Amino acid sequence: MKNSIKSLLALALVGASAVAVSAQPAVKLAVVDMAKLYDTHYKTIEQNAKIQADDQKAQEEVEKMNKEGNALVEEYKALNEQSNSPALSAEAKSKAQNEAQKKLEAIQNKQREVQTFIQNTRNSLGQRLNTFRSLMLEEISKVATDVAKRKGVTVVLDKAGPTAIGISNLIYADPAFEITEDVLKEINKDRPAGATAAPAAAAPAAPASVTVPGLAPKK
Image (cartoon, rainbow, N blue to C red; front, side):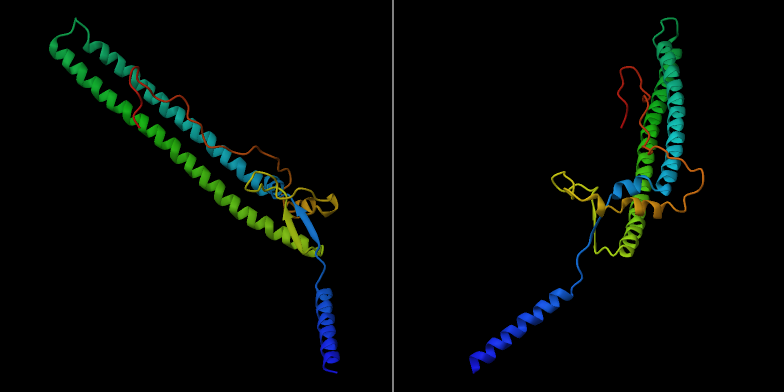
């Protein structure tokens, strides 16, 4: 009798477990391409256009500073030649040498100014992009979550991001599970009329630096 009761209890527990498992909702997967959603978001396009404009202004400023530096180089070369002229008196040569030294110091200051400006601009644009990207990915993730919930999805996978060994997190997914286009429509529904795509902005590249013949730029 005791063995029969134990067997019945065991069967009851197995049955309860089966009921509990069957009560869990079925897993429904969906796939999105977060990189595509970010790149094609109208806010990303607008931000890239703004950064590109600031990048162009920065490059123009660098070119202006380089012209000022190159003008100093020409003045330095002229003074240096004067200091070596046999036609000048010792006093005149000494004066030219002193003026040339001052010009050389001004050139070195200009070199540092150019390099500092370029580095600061790169850092500023990079920080702006990183902050914007972080906020946008958070916003897009929320929209993707809302779309997934409306579709009854329980798990959403991003197929854009690489793993530690450099391959996609997702090896294969049936196109029927793709919700990228649905999310894309949702995030761009408020896109201003007439908005056009724009290339991503890059930090300004350093134009030819201010240099003096035979003298390395100061760092």
